[in-house]
Amino acid sequence: DAMVIQNPRYQVTQFGKPVTLSCSQTLNHNVMYWYQQKSSQAPKLLFHYYDKDFNNEADTPDNFQSRRPNTSFCFLDIRSPGLGDAAMYLCATSRDRPTSGSPYEQYFGPGTRLTVT
Amino acid sequence: GEDVEQSLFLSVREGDSSVINCTYTDSSSTYLYWYKQEPGAGLQLLTYIFSNMDMKQDQRLTVLLNKKDKHLSLRIADTQTGDSAIYFCAETSYSHAGKSTFGDGTTLTVKP
Image (cartoon, rainbow over all chains, first blue to last red; front, side, top):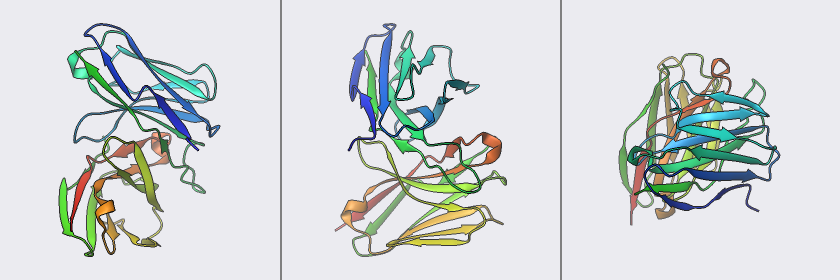
């Protein structure tokens, strides 16, 4: 039944050691999103893919990169994690971008909680 | 830029109604959403409203939209302890290529 799957659920990495978080979806949705969420804050969009088209947010640090090798999978790479990157990372999908006819709401995975030591 | 604001905390007694409020700044907002997040979990869509609607009801949930004041509310009737969670308001518009802007969330605590 799981529709948006994130692995691992908990990840511990060392300061400066590259880490990759993964997301997969069984919904066959066109759009995939990565959000960073810190405690008591709104999810902050890092980037999203519309099919293979990558869209980076202007304030996403260069330290964060993403890959989408196929429709089902999307990866978040943090090249040199700092203490400030400790957060919950949420992956979401939507069938398409909202139009006047449909909201095309986002479906979220359970998140990966990243700890940086 | 776009901004979505919510009050941070709400506490109610079981069986009472809860009303969570949200204000937004983007006048081109097309859809407004309410998401629920339980501890350690992702966000779950509860309901949404199109910007040309004033009200939407879905079982215990009632959404009211005042487009003139850019004010959105979520009313939960007969609130249960299982409703304790963080509730996020979000908006999206065509001008943002379908990206959503989220509020900081309202933590709802339901006391027995």
